[in-house]
Image 1 (spheres, rainbow, N blue to C red):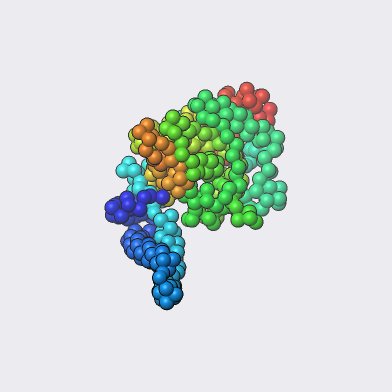
Image 2: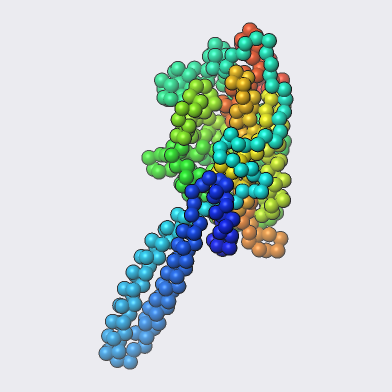
Length: 421
């Protein structure tokens, strides 16, 4: 959420941000609604002052006749105040809904574009894996090795259901344990957060109101979050931190739930796009300083690049175009891993920063060295998701005999060098 004063003073900038992000938002409608809100607030304050004055006059009335006349006058003021209050409540609701739709302003380095196809490659690492044999996809390899059962997964869960089994499970645990050590060395505090969250946390992080169709809900109207970012940001909602506490650096580990409602017909086979998965997520709260935020953004993205490099999987990093940014994101990188059977890169990680967009919504502030209250800046990045990473890992490390070579860094955690031998 942006400050209304900033929005009023920079309406052209907000309109340009909405256009760049391909978000349908009318800033002039918000300004008009805000004008109405301000006028009505002034009116109610005036009527409330008249009511208070009337109450004082009634208390000091000199005669029953004067008191009766003052009471009659006060009833007129009270009725007018009640009517004005009702109108103000309706206007406030409209204003609040519009404020939740205001897009954050993209960084100047964000390229224009109509979809993720227009994201710009900024880095490529590793040679695309070449085979002296016809490579298989991860589904065939993992099914033959007893690591994956999609047929029974769909029988139990439905579309996008899966069972990981045997060495598929052991490989995930090896990745998680290695990731805990790797990212723990980067000075992150590990956290297992609640993943059933109250609605306010999704509004606070910017996933609502636009993304509701992609979320699972409970019978109590709570939500199953699609990322640990949501509860980790909610952890400090309505808190005032000291500058000495910053930065807060968390490594969240959690199950994640996404309906993939907007992905009809996309990635209908395999482990690329599933409804439930596990993910380690980097979340940082820092001082309200643009240069510092940029530094942490580059750092958390680089952390994941280094992790992928240590596994030996070819990847590329792209800067997301305006149309591929969320409502609150200022800038985002995606890391995409090479998938040999598809001969293309597939997203494995996103790193974003928001300035104070999320912290205003969640009321996360800190007191700076001068004692002034300021909203913190927030940013996040995927550390690693499973089982999606298995797609690239299995396909890049497949052997001619159908076995899988285990990346050397995972061998101490997995216990053997080859799967299927």
